[in-house]
Image (cartoon, rainbow, N blue to C red):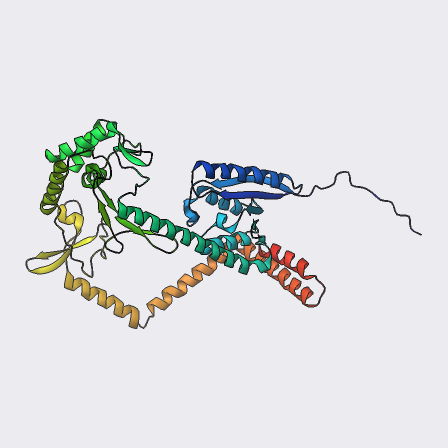
Length: 438
């Protein structure tokens, strides 16, 4: 009988821990919700720390942001980037509504993560996206989360419209010169004086650009704390009815369906004008005088200019300087000329060309391309294909990649054959197939 001796390894290879991350989100930045946010972080740290085969990578959390648009959630996007870098194997989150309330976004990101080999585990629904049969459940729960969000949004909107009708609605974004105190607009004198000065300068004949320049010279910060005032910001203050104590509600409106895009309200929804909703900063006669002057200046300086667009507009580029050609009438004949040469004939050596000559040349070239016996287009395409093939042959990286893909496809085919003959258990086949696909 042969003698067998066990040779134990000097070191045993440690099992690689699964890199796990957690994602949580709160719907607002109120104190109660921030407490909930802190509680979620503590719970995830405890949950992940309790597993020996899990290692906490990071906890990603977005505060006070909507779940409808994933691009506005910085932490969510950072988590996705780390998944793309293969730094995360599994994401755990409380529920689908925490992950995303938009069905399209939820499914798109789950599928993307699945292709990267990253699973998402939803605790409330008991769904793991790495299980093949869970996508229909995910679709259903995502749709329910989206419907819930739309219902909440509609209820809030009805409440807001009702308060607008009563003149009791106060926007959470106070305009420059005001502060929100106990949910009421209160005059903030350090900025209110600037607002009065803006109206006074405008009525003295200053333009919005000149007023912005003066404010910048004095280093007066804007409401957002920026040092640069722009004419558009000054114009907005001059037209804002809030500065006489009135409120014009629903200048914009949101769509009733996901993703609730916002648009200017040009009669699509009811608008409400409420008088005396809060203390004013400027007198009504001053505000009215500014509106009259705005309309007067608009008639004088802001007349709409129309530009004729021709078939050759922005189509002809100068071979000398790169400028586009412009259409001109010279001695009753339509001609095209380089814009730089037109302004200064010494700046560019190009010349004027009649429109008729340009059209004749264009038609001749089109006919040559279509009917030439030499088959110009066919030759060009053939040469491009030959060049592309040569590049592929000389590209070692592309060749190696193609070889690797072919090997993986062969392995996948072999797995399929073994499974069909009953040599492989379905779960073993699925695990190896997922690994090859990833």
